[in-house]
Length: 445
Image 1: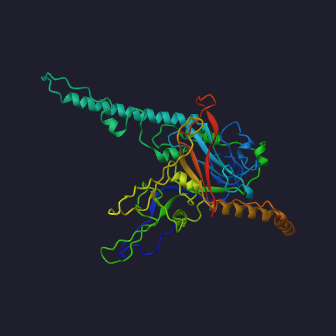
Image 2: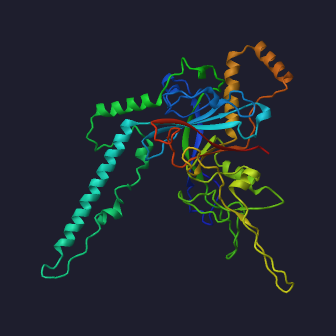
Image 3: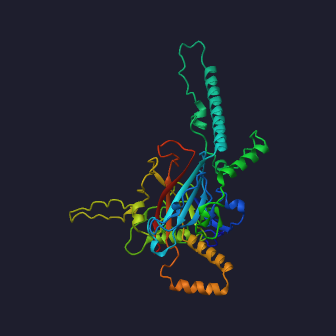
């Protein structure tokens, strides 16, 4: 969480305004990943290191191959991110090439999702759905009985058949709609206190989760793949300070061009505001730096089916925030019209999922600080291994090397299948799969 804002945002010195929580989750580094059990556990999110795969059939090393230079790339981020109402365990893997000639080119950063069916969790979901349906049916029967009791026995009118779901339909929805259980689905180790299963069963489920989410790469070719120093990736909510309220004469209105129409509340996206075209300055980059400045340590922004935060007004921005059609101007001199600056809103044009043809939606994006974190960790690791003479020779080699290393981009946006499909080549449902998703790269300025 960002520290409390100290500026006076209000006309009243006694009024204290709290920071506003958005719907974005921020991924931040959280120390060295050293525990062996965590290294091989796919449910442990990380920065750098080697990937821990979910599918039992380990994917080929070509998954990390840069599409520009064909060299193997390092793992940048691995995130444990199952859909809350899905029986599939899910992890996202993002690889990036560090060679200078490849920077900013599409294909130098690749994103894959690994899925594996969790039999135990699927049974738990089915049990909860059955319980929800039982409650729905009970309420429906109670409502039907209540209506029958109030019928005049001497009336010749036959009551119309009540909705079989009755009041239950209003509370729980039909048999295929259930109230969201975000916290419970997000943590698959969680057990309902009212569950009749024993502690042994709870322990068994945790063990099963670890077994499903873990794989050793001791004998894997991935062990020899290049890698950065592994770090834990922790998540925290994004908080933004309230809007400034300067002391001005009554009736005076001040509008911030970067946050026009901005509103508070977790359910309102701060990045869905319209962007204004300008020839004088890049408002997109200015808004990006302002937003990121509230939490400079962020390496990942996660908001499934949300709105990305564009880095600059380039071709990627044009495809995600297309310019609206300009209003027609009058042709007669006697008519004067004030034409406002056109606004851009989020209306992406992203290729659909090649497996199921469903729409791809924004899931997350990598932030510039990730490059700094990976570089610092790599340098710290190398400094522990090399002697003074080794470091001197390494510097000399780097100065003579014309193929400089180092990532250089503004942000990388990942768009994933909205249905999180898991099908085989014939289109039939599968127990596990490994699928590549779409990545848009915006280069640094």
